[in-house]
Image (cartoon, one colour):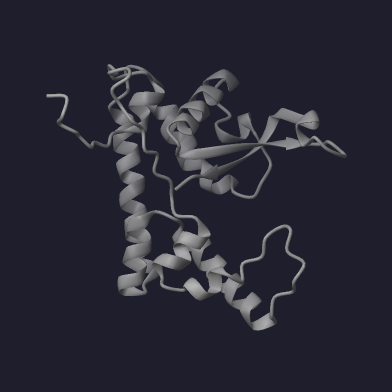
Length: 196
């Protein structure tokens, strides 16, 4: 039935691990990411503030009151994140506690998803690293800081799986004094950011 169109969603881990058979040439991907800061403001119906968000090329100063509003909403965005369900829950309830419940549910769902692949990967290592990442936010870390008892190759493998499944982003440190920054990258020291 070539006229039948199917929309489906699945675990990114299946793709990252090459777990599922794939109908080559018959699938269109639509990647969904967390809401950006502008989308977050739109969802909360603060569209007017969006036009004041400065760009890197902007030389026009922003009024202090507007600047403070942007900073306040940015802090809120850092707490709530860009997951649509968390944003909707905040909009409906104005409660960070409710948002935390959504985050907890997502967190547990990810960990349950890991368990399905215990034959393909070290689930204990993956869980340990997944739980260690929040303590590293804003810090330069070395692989061994995430799980001192594991070999670096195993830690890298788990991080690569998390990155391929779009749960995290890795940013490597650079000691370059000019452009390009990639000239001074060290793959031994990095920052990790959640993509959720």
